[in-house]
Image (cartoon, rainbow, N blue to C red; front, side):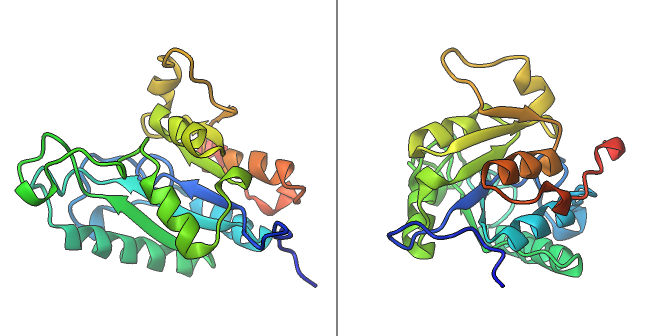
Length: 212
């Protein structure tokens, strides 16, 4: 018996485009080595619930530390491999990781430029949609910054702002003309909100908000 969400008539899947720092893992500034990664305690259960619901999960993250010369691009891949291993130990899986290494004020010439892949630019979502067969308009974004919500607006998805990371501060300073579809305490609550709207059982999520 399948527990997945039925695909659209064109066969494209729904997805959750998930921010990394401050959403999936603790925000510590520029993350320059894997041993500094700290998953939020509820993250494995939240990701596992999305896996069980049949939603694709795609991390989409700005990593301007590459352009600023704080760490090489290879370190981003190393960190993502470490996150994947930590989640796997909890029975959870991210389907793909996409990142933007650019910044207009970067010090590394190769990456010092404006681009359309830095959130809220939509290029990473468009790439994921092509490569993974995703329908962005059936999908969701989750993040701790308003540009994660702006990304949702750019691609026709629904956007959830979490209060972890920078989210609590961001909530107090909404940009003119931009509102989230939901503002919640953390990723576990975001997943519950998403599952309610996709007809799934929210009891799959171990909501451990008391540990914030």
